[in-house]
Length: 332
Image 1 (cartoon, rainbow, N blue to C red):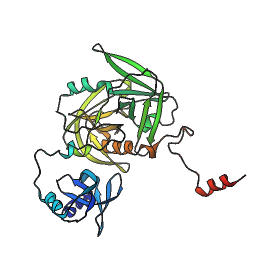
Image 2 (cartoon, rainbow, N blue to C red):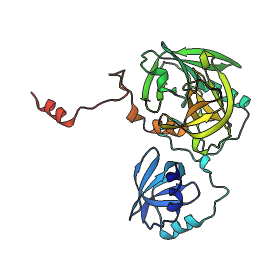
Image 3 (tube, rainbow, N blue to C red):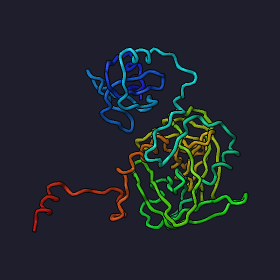
């Protein structure tokens, strides 16, 4: 982490003269011009002409492709003082792919937990399988929802319990036509879709920015711990970068228990900042959530994690080697 944090000051001192280039806007109002060679989960590779830079994702506010830029405008951008009206890093959404999920273009107002639960409660669901249950949440009105991979791992029968609000009352309905769209075992994420006919539009949530969280910031979780649906727990962010099993997690004092897995962790603006997935069993107030930035990466690259219906026990589709395909095509 120390190595990555030292990259940004070095980048700010670099001047680039490119007639037509991609522009990477950094969170401190500086920018880099060059050709984006690759966009990875944790960094962006940029060719600036005389060298190649590795820019950490958590330092990037926006990427604009093929924008005209001159040395004069580049210099002005780098020396310009921050504009009070310019969007902050927390207000800059990750571009959704094909409208599958949405982020706020401006910062929503902070509200109380009571108000947010009333607004967002319908978007949180209970995911049931023959082997157990977990939680999840809708990211689109069409029925796409996120949960944990371990909630549905090895299961072929999945149902989703949704709580529709009608006449001021919550009406529970079970949907059994649920399709696995994509899943990533290593990130512990799964994308499901309700495909029942005549299903209504579902209440969705907005995905926030976990990088913009501060240690000590208030958060709350909604889920089904031990099967107790629509349970709300509140806490703070204990740390943003807790290493567990080779990955970095959000640690929170919000109570997380079996059944919370796959449920949302909200900030006080009602945006999802994490997906709750585990706790330390011999302690209290030691819950963990997958940062929402990993969820966005999973959704934006969901084709790479597409579920293969021909092989239900495997989340990946393996292609035949080209030489073997050629021999099969040429054989009589």
